[in-house]
Image (cartoon, rainbow, N blue to C red; front, side):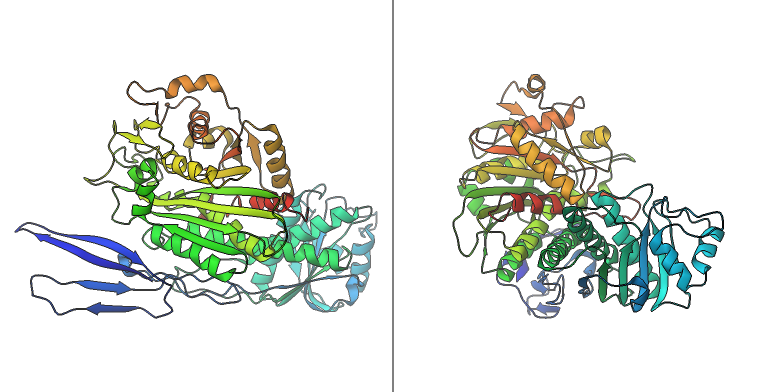
Length: 588
């Protein structure tokens, strides 16, 4: 458990101050308690022990916290329902269950002169429904456009309801089939369905590989679409969906393996979403470190954890990281998980490095103004959430022949008399000095020491992820992340993984001439070069802390980390990272 201990007390006639320090030990299963010790009336010393999460073994997540949270917030217990996916080849009119969901393109919805479907599957379904399916689709102006869906309760089939879900002009991309799965989940939630079947109106001519990837995307979309983070709400509804049959995509062990893979990755994405959604008063650096340790315990056959405290980081000369952490009452925790297959030869060593600012106030360059989004700065650890979400999935999948290091320099960027100031010069663990000209460009300072540490692990390739710059959001918007790397080969690898995972990346230039903006008069460099090309100069800064012999990529995910419409985390990055690791394994 982690315990908050009041270590000193100061008072005057006008004010009182307490200093807090957290200590960690093994996770505690105990319920909330608050212990007080009899002390003189002028001083009370208190320990507070409270759990962050209390989740089921079905979810395979062991969220625990053991310190009192500001506002006395305790997340509710949650159970993510386990969905049983099955691939079947049966007549859709004979399938029995709650909802038969049919994915249709605009071409599938074309009708003949008698207003009857021309598509064979829709025609067959409509014949069993006495023409009502065609009539209703006409009345509701359903044309198969993306985002359109209609669910009808009609007699005549083995299923209680039949749903039509629009796929647009054609359906071939991962995102189109994932959207189909999300629509299926929405329909299941709306009708409290426990069993659903999914079929495409047109799937002729699709290759076996295409069917595998399409079925996988549907499964992923269904799991993610069903997820609702209600841990911090006083009331919540539990979805009732238990089984999904995927019809017409083939059968056999290869498809079953693909569906299981999609499920494992999806629960990794959900874990990442929950981490980002958790408020900063609950998810402190100590709790993030405990979450990482819990993953190592959960997958102890293939995973180990090493959590470095502040003193250990000082011994490693991590002056850049510790300068950012210096102002916070919550001490830093440097997280290092290692995945190593239980058998076989390791051929490739990879490192995934995630920015882990559990809250970013901006420091003395405090975030101000209507567009500063300080209230959303809990998501400044989105990079670490992607890394730990990937760790969860990889621990479950267990790819052979590859060793993976998951590294997070977790801390908060706050304001106090002990914090770094604009103009300070700090020294990173590779000996390079940095003049801090903006305390709100802190993420790169933590990543600097994390990247040096990663290189010292003897890895072949590094990918770091960070909600690093607003400049990248201005350039690319909120749907895609920018990638920066001097390695064309690594760029090809990661972009290919992103295409298969359905996450959007765009390669940005590493314009070396921009480094001129990063020069300091008193140190080796400044930590920010201003607004022009801000995401590029940030990447050039990080490059200074990577060994030239190591292939490296930086992913700026400040845009896609958050869904403003849903006001929730996306879990961006997890699926691409897992796919990339899988492609570097012996099983690829």
